[in-house]
Image (cartoon, rainbow, N blue to C red; front, side):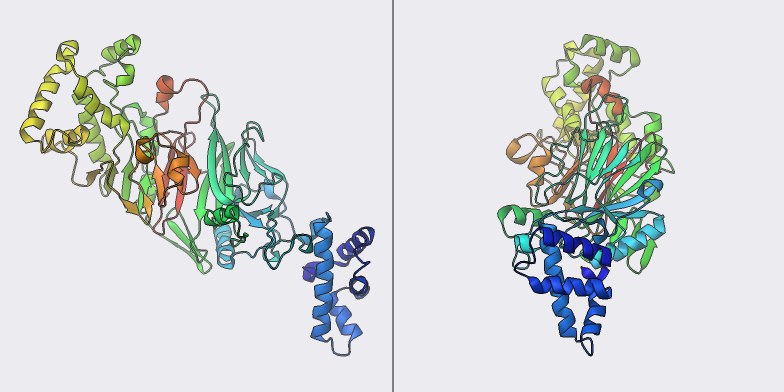
Length: 544
């Protein structure tokens, strides 16, 4: 610590230690500090006071002073010069934000890779200072001071900084390093501003806002320091969810875009179609999968389709090997949620949205068009499942418009289907339609009991059903031993290993989510090493 400590800081510590009577039992420590102050440093003092600058003497002085400093810090002494803080943070438009835990070594490979990334992206590196009292055999409570690895001096931040009118870094919010839910209870802090806090666990949660206003986002950063926790149950759980990670933030006007960056064991990481190491950057890397937020095709506007599928959209830009699709069909025409809504039923009649077969045919065409050049995995989801529910309760005399289709479909499945228990949405797409209209071979329909993994990430679950038939949730999915990316809630989140995407059907808020809400257009990409990143769409853009 004292290698970078100037004389003024040593004088402050000496005064503080005298006031706290630290030198009563350690008079030698006072002498060592006095000599270091007199000669400008420990090294100079050792050289002056011994004939040859004896390294043993120097080490003894160094250790003695360090103990005094640590005791002083443990007793409440703080001095900003102990670690160099970041400056000019608010002046930038791009940042790489991570956190660093006290008395812990940084992951050198990750730090060096961050430097390469920041130089490449013209971004400012920031490490939010986090604290943990780790009572291991090397650090015993009051005997241990609080310090941070000096190799990233100049990155440190321990105060609140506004990055724009809608986003802040809450460096002054101190969250327990072993907290299992670091974003819990932070909804009102910062009021309407989205917020980034420092914590070893990478987490994201949205706070409900009025419609027409972007939801407030809460993010925690992950860490650039090695996992350094005790041996209690709480500490071991914190170690399990410690992420070597950070957030890349870029700003366009008032809009901001936040990308999660997860490093591998060497500290290397992917960002979109680039791969970063301490040696440099390579490009042209394809994500293994692009998990699209719930599509509900019939509700997507032309602008939304252009944003997702256009030449400047993320699919064309990143060229993922596979797509993962949730609720690709809405079953709007005869959705059971609408059966008692007379006004909506009349609206459907007047706008031509009354024929089940037409909606399903359009969805098949949409799937084929958007799946060209890659495989699409269609996740078994509750809205396409509504087709089967409709068939089970259909009464021809009560729905003449769809009676003919019902008869033809049921007859076809009875003659050519393998089992009446086969999923009806899949059967329609792959067998009922004429051969030239069916879903192509590169469109794969999953069942609830399938398992498809991309670099250890399970993409098979929609999110409506959890363990043992219970309702799905981020909390329940986070307890699975596999990492998981799911859909359904329309409110994107990251909680431990469970990542939930948003939705593209923001028009559906008029029917299902009136009032305040946290729906957002957000997708997820899965990299070749199993790392993931959320892609946020704001005002038709996904990059600043």
